[in-house]
Length: 196
Image (cartoon, rainbow, N blue to C red; front, top):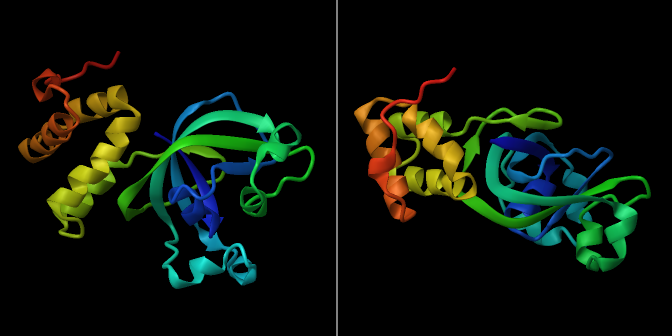
């Protein structure tokens, strides 16, 4: 799945659906699901601004995947700035020449998932991290299933391919639970996918 690292407090604002537009100096063609990742760097000074002060009482995770959002469009900020709320404007850099990455649905993970981020839009393979956290007892089964469900809802076909590549009974059972809870037929999970 694609991922985008944001500095805190922007990552938490996005994960909670309070910020729907991420501003960047660059654009791209991709549209679809994007994991919202909290970088290890934060802008703590922003918490002194009135629009951000409510975040002082929250834990702002660093170095973790927080949510999945649907990137629906990217526009020059000049084209969207006037349609945004004052709070949304306060949560981004809307200088001329920048791009607004507009997100539709955003669904937070039940718990932050510690993973390394990168610059730009990058690929992030979260299911093995979730499985390892469960194996180590850091994440319980219910939280693991709920976390995997968030990923599967945004990209069911990618989730099915990933699930088919895991042959341990424990992983297969877990993936079948996720599909069943989403109303999908878990028996349609292929035994093996041949890659060319």
